[in-house]
Image (tube, rainbow, N blue to C red; front, side):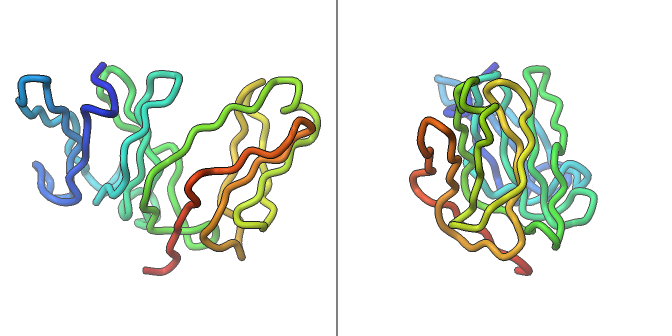
Length: 165
């Protein structure tokens, strides 16, 4: 699978006009990997992140179930899936890059806390090294922090989100 470093997005264009994900070979040849079709999102506006699991993740500003954007993943077989549909309750119109953080197993089960620029967020422990959270109502652009018994992890740089644009 091509790495996220060799992939990119176009905000518009492609077969459906909603943007694409593309791959550039070392020789400079461009291949379209996905044409956004609104259901999985449209108008992608983020740097792609290839996570430790090998899956590529990104965001789209519009489209998806509620037309407020999506968090999507693209697996090695080039299938794009919206894994979160943004909404007006928890934030919409996502833009900017994604982050990946690892929380040690022993710490994860000792009541970590998650906050978005100081506003606490609900979270779920997914695995010994992963948690899932969402931007809570009332938060603002700034730092994402995960507090554990072993200390605090913070994003660098901070995140920016826009609601209702």
